[in-house]
Amino acid sequence: MVRVRDDSFYAAVGGHETFVRLVDEFYRGVATDPVLRPMYPEEDLGPAAERLTLFLEQYWGGPTTYSERRGHPRLRMRHAPYKVNPDARDRWMLHMRTALDSLALAPLHHAELWDYLERAAHSMLNTFDD
Image (cartoon, rainbow, N blue to C red; front, top):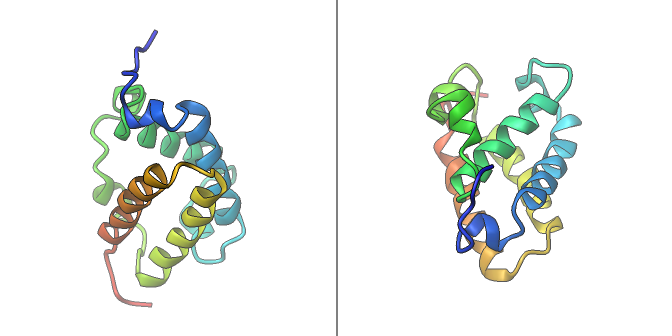
């Protein structure tokens, strides 16, 4: 059994269920997005949702399952094959903001999580070409 620190951000926002809700809502938007959906080669977005959930849980102090299964996150490397331009970034941020807003977190938690997600989205840019 994995022990999670009671004082972690992960625990403070509701743990696994909160991150599942965030990611599920995010992928509802991605599923119909004409720019982002083609970046996911799998017909089923479930495996991508599981990877993102595990990554976010680990980053915020939850279980380390992501690294145990996949090794170091290497986010930029894993996204390098895809054209992540400002339009793709902005669409990602739109769907993630909608998902985050749906959680109704405490304002401080909402702001902290959004700050990270926004910085992460900007760091994934790898082209300015259309």
